[in-house]
Amino acid sequence: MKRNYIVGNRKVAIIGSGYVGSSIAYALAIKDVAREIVLIDINHDKTDGEAKDIRHGLPSMGTADLYAGDYSDCVDCDLIVITAGRGRKPGESRLDLTNENVAIMKNVVTSIQQYYTRGVILVISNPVDILTYKVTEWMELPDGMVFGSGCILDSSRFVRTIADYAELSTGVINGYIVGEHGDGMVPVWSHVTVGGIPIDDYCSDMGIEWNDGIKSDITNKTRTMGSEIIAGKGRTHYGIATCVCQLADAIINQKPTIASVCSILQGEHGCRGVALSVPSVVGPSGIVQRIRERWAPEEYRGFFDAVENVRMILNSANIGS
Image (cartoon, rainbow, N blue to C red; front, top):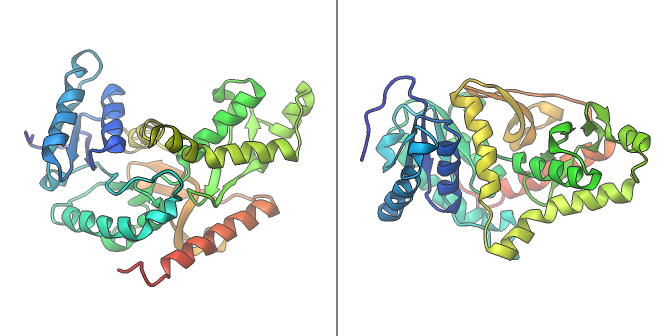
């Protein structure tokens, strides 16, 4: 059942009611981030069932008005989250999904455009760097109004892995991944801190073994976590759902945050015409600013390799307009 939009109602539309879309709706609802959440999917019966299942637990957990709708409900949204597309199968890379999901995304964007009036568009579907570029191109909105989840989940996994190794709370560790959401992800070790102290110094002071081999092991664990989860349970969805909550809160509740998310670069690190993740200030109008920092030479090399890899895929004959 549709509801009439009320100005300032903190409205979110989620395109795609599969595991990822439904998990995002559930997380937003129990965290009470949005007041109105509409799930949209070609399979309306399933979507209606997902919406009702979540709604039934809300009286004691949240106040969101959550329902199944259609593309006309994209009118006057503060945030539109796109999760539609085929998920990654065991043994596949995120880039293996490119051609199929670009075609699906084109249909989604065409449907959104019929009813779009305002709001930020957040792309979750993989390969997120490629799809974010294409959605930005198709929507023709101001810079930052379209962006992708990018490396926000990779960064969360990175921090979790470091915390487990150092036997610390994740709350005292600051670190992030840049570049491609995939095999080309680049951990920015030069900016990892523990309680504001460079991690190299912290481990030295605390007598914790720390060297390039340990860093490489943590990097590899972070890079393969998604594949391992998919091999074990067939999909990933809870992790990205909680990350989307952070971004949604920044956008619809005006609580700016800094996250490593992807958007089309506008000259940062000398790069243009490709969507990749860098630390960015996210607020009510999407990406407000991409933060320019100095990285270590090897981190720049990894980032530039990711730029060329993604640019090559964008320029391939199979990625049309």
